[in-house]
Length: 194
Image 1 (tube, rainbow, N blue to C red):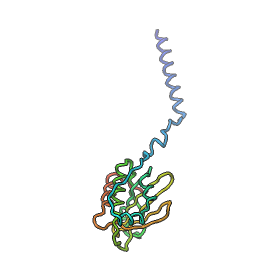
Image 2: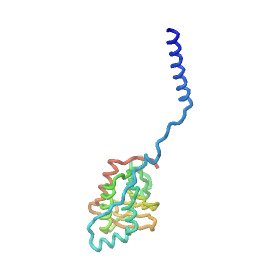
Image 3: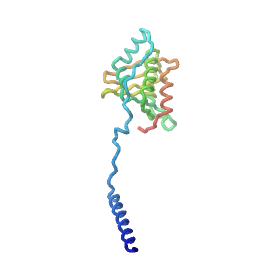
Image 4: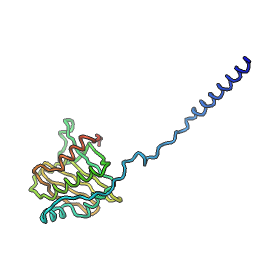
């Protein structure tokens, strides 16, 4: 009986040793597909704001409908901000070097940002000369991209898109979009180094 128990013990021990040998080979574990970890694809939204004829005309000149269409239909959408600390306060201010980003993952946020920005951008204002942008919006739809740098200090923005480059001004008096962009960056922004 003692001999049978000893044999069973060695069989079990040998089975464990075999498992250890398999795990010692360092066979890679199955990896989750990178697509499962990516940001979900956003659905198109419809921007609804009330504008008079003059505001519609100005918005079309500075942010043409084909550019707005990419923004509204964008599958990927992010907000960027340059937060200047003491360590980089002596750098050239005219360059935009974002160090915070927030990827927008729900359509409600994208709609809120675009409605506020289109509202501000339709209200032509006389800009200052500084142009030191600290905010940006980046969007992509079907391999077409739009990037908008915004300087709330001088009330100007610059657009780079598949359809050309454009510029415009935004309202100086309490721009809605600045508050929204800052709130989103504060709540969900991630710091990165250039």
